[in-house]
Image (cartoon, rainbow, N blue to C red):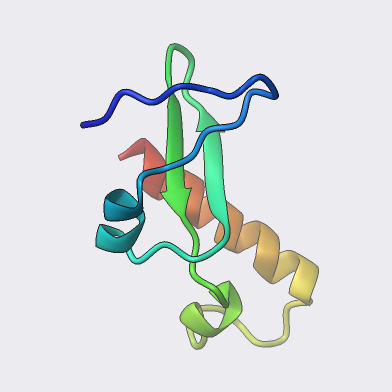
Length: 77
């Protein structure tokens, strides 16, 4: 657990130890969970990670929305 301070622009820097332990890439999903937020690391290439999980006849936009729903559902668990 870490207590972090926002800078004057409201930005937050995650400690390197946390980033490394989660093997974080450059993007995260931030979810407003009411009285707190959830920060979920996203893979560099979410489409490659999800390869084979969806019907390939779907458009990229449809695949992306479905991937976002999966990530949000996992965050809620």
